[in-house]
Image (cartoon, rainbow, N blue to C red; front, side, top):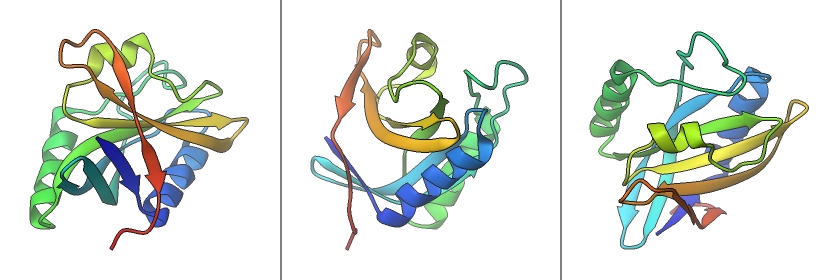
Length: 143
């Protein structure tokens, strides 16, 4: 499976990460699935509802997930994953990320260094929940 982000989606994720720094940002990914490709055409910026350690953790409530699922249905899209930022850390999932992730979804992480977003890498939780596999990510126009 590979993940395609439109340039607008990638820019929105980076802007959200920049605006929330030094805290983690988070959001939902909406798009379509075609064979081994997921094309993300919209994002929903979500509130990091974590009350402490927001520099290192994020929390998306079930209510926000339900809202994202409803918006996806209304747009005839699928909820395909969730993005978040890692302020001053690599774009690699933490143990906390593994413990709170679900199989199926894509999990792009954007690294933010001193307030500036750098790389975005995407991950998929293994079915046995033992860890993540990196998912190829491309930024390109989606037709």
